[in-house]
Length: 240
Image (cartoon, rainbow, N blue to C red; front, top):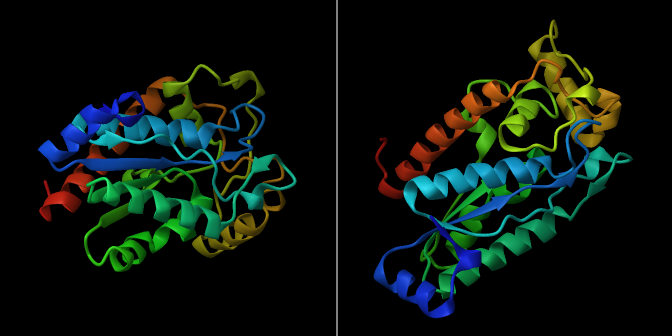
């Protein structure tokens, strides 16, 4: 892995000239995650996922974009930017990478509210760059078998695996979809997209109380393995 923050100008330019560098931009959010997880949870997890993938495949790791689109969590705490702002920032960053000779970028997303602004980023930048830049937007939770949640079992387990800033004594059960039909779950999902507190009451989707560090380590390894393979497939056009 090449952590771009630690590099010096002559070295990084020489490195880009020597080989085809692949850049990784992690995108997170700052928003409530119940009383037991920090507001940096999405950014913390996506940073770790991006770091491990970059280490595994020797990609160029950029600093995490910590701010995302989280208005749906109001009146619970969130620091949000507009969809158009996130789209513009990512477009500018990818264009800037191209001007420095980097022609392939993975945008690793760690927050559901960012899905819309990152969705068409590849087509947008392909057009802007006149086919000179390849951008692949990927959301990390699509690369594990478990259904994802918000501050529930999965996300809390992932945080236990990577952070000491978890207060399990404050963990509370949130919205449970057990026994719901797919239609009912989809309906709750639409409501959550508009107002997460209205859907979940306490800001938690799932039940974090039985989350463990071991479960988090297993889930993280699965994500890194599957997402890493997907990245390599994007580069080569062949499944590994």
